[in-house]
Image (cartoon, rainbow, N blue to C red; front, side, top):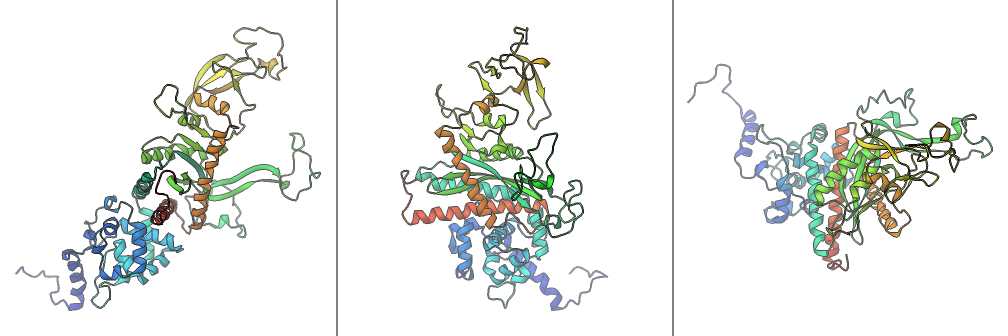
Length: 510
């Protein structure tokens, strides 16, 4: 009985009332979107599915694929602050379907969901009731536009997707534990280049400043210029006698040398583990612009890996780009609490930086080329490198602290300038870098595990990680995380299928 507002028209037709009545029914009906059971709960209780979802073969297949993740604990945003918001969980589930179906764009994903309305209900999108629809809601009106879905992928919190990746690792651990498999005993780390969707990466397009790193592409300002591989050798087909070797006095023409492959884009670092007879699994991932060095991935990736596994992996395999002292030191940990317990190690090829390969005596002092122990001269703190650390400057034993000889036994080239010197980090990892036996069977067995990252990268390429049709760094990073989640989910299905067929039920088979 409230008095009418002077500016409000009370003669509302049924057409204008119907949309508001539809929203009201969503608020009061038991099946409103924010109380709809999540995918994990529906996987455990399929009897809660509506009949049209139970009858959909596609919906049942994706319920089996996605339900193992902990959707019931998904860090969702507040869904009560405005009418019918789209949950982030619904977007993540829909994007996993998009990747599995290899749909190129959000527009094609939206059309696929419209053609399969059971997936709209299953993912958890807000529903717009429609009395004449077989499923009880309008599929097209229940979905955001393709542009809005793309914006949501860009704004999706990274922690939410990392939660799903953590959940996939936990599910794999629980699935393999009864078979006597401990996930993550040996890991492999590598990076995968991602080519940005810009004309600067198109060799047929004319770009005057293609490789000017100070002018990022207008199509994707977040990407950076980087080198996929770099080498210093003659280009294929060049006559060996056409140019002499490359001394400083007679440089070789640049057109005869293949220097490297440069792209604008990103790189995805991944930690993978290989379990014989079961497959490869992703433990952690990180996407950065292409100008970041490989060693910059080590700390964040290993921190996430240790948190998900609950322990520090004892063994790891890297390529030569990760030849850094702190990586050796990280894995040099005793495997048990026994005093004489063996230590883990990182299998990394020696990169050859810093001249000749140092040797050490029993006290840990480096030996010069004359096989004499070099005494430490002074210690300083280095802040200019990625990891700040103390470094020790070692001097020639025949010149410091007191001169004891008039000539070097091996006639070192620096003898006239004070003798040979070397500077190495004051860390046991610096000595392990030189002392690691790279010819041992243990080293070779661990280094073979690098194939785990190669197989994971191969699967990621099939899912479109190398050339994403996106022009934003955050969206590409989120898409990469979803790709690795899907790889783990597919691996989980293979494990369960093998168990259902009676294989791998004992530690002997694992």
